[in-house]
Each structure stands twice: as C-alpha cells, then as structure tokens.
Image (cartoon, rainbow, N blue to C red; front, top):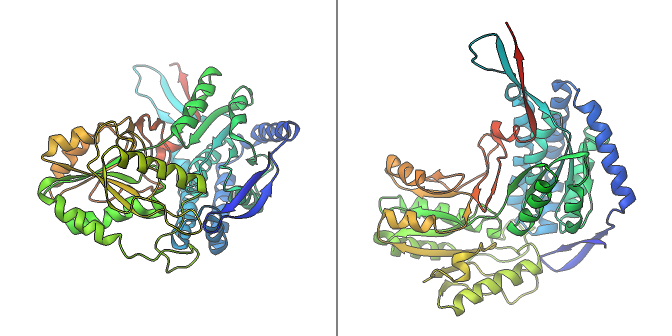
Length: 455
C-alpha cells in the first residue's frame, strides 16, 4: 500500500512512496545486522565524528528542513526552525558527552575488584511520530549510535519526506550502510519484526494503542522496549503565582505546535482565588490571532497535522460539550480549507466526560477551579497518564512539595515542560516506561555487563 504525504494547509497530495516488499525489508535487516558487527567495535572518536557531521548538516540545511516539516505536518515555520536547531543540539550533546556516559563504573566490593561496562546490544528498531519528525528520531538515534548500536526507523506515514531526509543526511555524513536505515512500512507490520532475532530492542513514541501493541510484541519475544506515549499534563497555578508568567507559559505550553505534543499543558488546574484573572488573561491571549499559511512567519495559528486529526479532536470536543461542559472560547473546527481547529478552552468538565478521561491532541485546554492545594494534587493525579506537569508559585519550596506528590515522570517549576538534551524524558502509568535524553537515555539499550576480578 503506498505511503502518501499530504499538505494539511490545503489538503494537496505532495508525494507518494512505495512500501517495502518483504524481500526489500529482509535485505535491510540483513544489512543492519551486518553493519552492527563492525560498528560495535568502532572507536568512540569515529562515532563522535559522524554525529557532529550530522549535526552540522542539519544546521546547514535548517531552512530547507524546516520547510519540509511545515509542508508535511503543518508546524509554524518559526517552530520548525527551532526544531531543527534542537535536533542539532541533541546530536552534539551525545557526541560530546557519550564517552563520559559510557565509562566503566567501579563497584565497591569487599575483596578483589569489579566494574560495570556498558556494551552495545545490536539492531534497535524505533517507531517514531509525526509531531516532531526530526527531533523525536534524534532523541533515540543519537545515544544509541554513540553506544555502538545500529538503528532502523519506521517513521509516521504522514511525514515520509522527513523520514527519507534523515537517512540521506546520515549517508551524506558518511555513515556506513546499515548504521541508520529508514523503513517505509505500514504500522501493522511492526509486531512481526519483534520475532526477528536480529532485532534486539524496540522503542516507540506514539499513542497508547500503538504502544500497547509494540510492548506486547516485544514482551512476547523477550525484547527490551521503551515506550513514550500520551499525556494529560496538569498545569497547576497556586494563588501566590506570578500570574502574567503563568499565563504566558500556559499559552506556550498548550498551543505551541498547535497543541500536538504529548507533554502539552492539557489541564489547567487553578486556585479559585486567581482563577478568574487567569482565565480572562488566557482568553485574551488566544483571541484575534492570525490564522493562515504556516509557511508565513506572520501566521500564529496553523493547521493540525491531518484531516483525521481534526475529525478526532472535534469528535472529542463535541462529545464533551454534549455531556454538559462549556466552551469559553472556540469549540469547533474552522470553516475554511485545510485541517484547522479553533483555539479552545473547555470548562465545567466532570469525571466521565471525554475531555476528563482522554488526551486531547490539539489546541484545546481543559480548565478546572480548585479550592486548595490538596484538591489540586488529587485532580492532577486523577488520570491514567503520568508524563509531565508544571507548578507555578513564588514559593519554590511549596511548589516542589506539590511536585513531589504528582504522579508523573517530569515536573517543571514556574515554566512549561520542555525537552532538553541534558534532562531525562519519560513517564509513568499509561504514559509509558523508560527514558530518553540525558545520561539515562544512553542506558536503555546497552548491556550493563558486570566484570569481576578476583584477588
């Protein structure tokens, strides 16, 4: 079945790619397995040089690559350019720091000596999403290539040109054949790959459903897996917060990338004393914005990634409104060509409503009033997800105490959650398991081998 890329701004078909045949897929796996036999023994200096070259190419092609992101999934062009910069920084981070991260780790023992050595495992399969088409790949690929693994990436079907471009960049940078491989495959073929003994680990960033499927396949075949899934992040505003700062960060945290991020601030939980001021300021912030072509730097509101994304989001919003919630702003798709949806704030949301129970992947904020800190924490934890969150307060100790009681993998104080190369990224509960980025990101797919030396 052909893989198509469609411009979400005007619904025009851009390009079509053929899916790999079984024979082509077998050859690519064989090539990757063969590449690993030499790459695992390569010098760290060689791996470092490769990633630094990859980073350099990304920077030199920033304008071209940013336009490709915007063309395929609709991200505002300035945000696409920022993504390319982030990608380069991820490759540079691991190139510069992996030697330190991979050093032997001495163990304290009563007699003799012992240490742990981090060794590569083999061919790692990554299943990556469309919302950050270059950055999500870099987060998985950079640490693993530095560790001595080789990568096979099945990218999202709506960003095939981005997927193809990453492989081209690695080839341009001088990567040996098989060290990085792009796979044009349908998602339904991924579970079968878990049965292949040459693939030793699997990682997925995406939906809860896709993660469950990959995790099941990996577990059945005794393969290590990492899952970074959805989120319903709480953004708690205490009564002593800097309200202007909180509103600014709320806007960025919810509506950047048109709200299409697993770590978007999706649920605003605000103390009653400041709730009216907060919501009125946020409403003002999201009204009167320029809607249009995401390639135009003046545009502030672009399309969602696909027509299907708009339809699903609207179904969730309409079901929530029908159940008794209210839309303070927005609440429907825009009456224009393309995959556009109004910036929306929902309130009066109750347990059982779609917006309470599910992740809304788009520019829709859920607003809750709470009377005290305890209620804020209970509401923040009243979700099956546990990815990230934020707490705003001028009292840092108080904010940290609240953060410590939130059941998530990441909490940011007085700023919205953001991905950085030097900070670990990952969640708990149904938001997945394992970590990307930071020193922890290089430890997921390595053999932590104990070497014991007798006296």
